[in-house]
Each structure stands twice: as structure tokens, then as C-alpha cells.
Length: 243
Image (cartoon, rainbow, N blue to C red):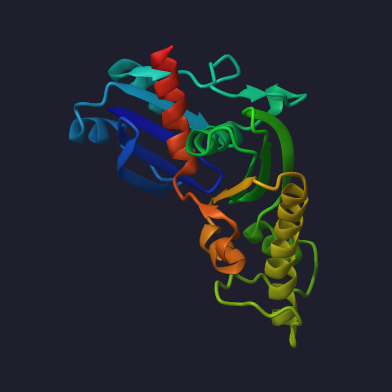
């Protein structure tokens, strides 16, 4: 069994895998403590582990995993089953690498656009030859709401509204929600259009905290993969032990 930990900007996600199958998933607020010893006690068959982090995290997690499991140190030297052609690989977020790994494992030999709609919206472009060539990063939906409130004196701090789909806001609140949510959606549709024009048989894979918003808005043009980063990290771990 494999223990997978993804320490993100907003949440920490933990997955227990038997081979390629996710058998248990846990989510925590990023400031909440994680009882790794309890998880290991519940699943004594766990032998291997990997941690991906985009934040400054508690070193106790790493120490515990190194003492109790065969723990893979996920860094630039980790062997991958796809190529990274990014010009500054040392700046590439581990979450982006993991998302690409998950998508390539799901759809091998296909051009891919991987969209991670979380704290930031990340776009990752992969060729049919499993080459990650780059992408884009923009503020996520919650970040856009916070920015409008923080950088102005009178605009309120609003929250995400799942069912809002109006383009023309008829009040300040409606205008903000339209600008944030419809604006993000138009941005995403623009990247999808760019990708599709160049890859007729390409596949769009989406994940992240605002995944349901994308699925509802974009209908059948994307494949939803809510556990893409966890499964990608598991694929990296499986590949490491196989090679």
C-alpha cells in the first residue's frame, strides 16, 4: 500500500492506495494537524509514501514517514515517466508535476490540457509524446474575490456562488460575481479554444477545488478528475519502485 500526501495552499489531502486504486481519502484544512501515526496504524500494510508540498510544512510529517515507510523524496531529481521541457524546472510547482503525471497515466499518447482550478488556476500543456511544454498560472476564483475587496475601498468581499450564470450583473454584487466567475470561465474557455485549434484529438482534464463549477459550465468538453494530484503522486511512486 502507498500513502500519498498533498500539502496545498488551502487544503491538505491524504490518499491511501492499493496499487492504482484509491481506497481512502482524507482532507484537512492546511492549518490542521495530521496524525500520520494514526493513519499508519489504521493501514499497517502501508509500506511506501510520498509527500508533495507547495507550502512550508511541519517537518514532523517527513520524519515520521521516513521512520515508518519507504519514503520517496519528491524533488527535481525524481524519475518521471514523462519529459519536462519547462525552461525553469526548478521553479515548477510539485502540484503541477503531479497533475501532469495523473493525466498522462490516464490518457497516454494523447495531447493534453490539464486545468487545476484551485487557489490559482493552472493550465498545463502536454504533447502526445508525453512532453510537458509549459502553461499558464492565473488567480483562482477565491483569490479574485479577495483582491477586489482588498485593493478597493468600497467593493465588498463576496463568496463563490455555484449557481450564478449571469453575464450582465444588474447590481454591484451581481457585477462582481459576473466579473469574477464568468471572467474566469471565459479565460478558461479561451485556453481550451487555443488548445483545441492545435490539437483536434486533444483531451482536457480538469481538477481542483472549483472543479464542479467547471463541470457544470463546460458540460461535456472536459474530463473531471477530482483526485488527479493524488493519483499522479501515486503513479510517480509506483514508477519509482518499478525502476
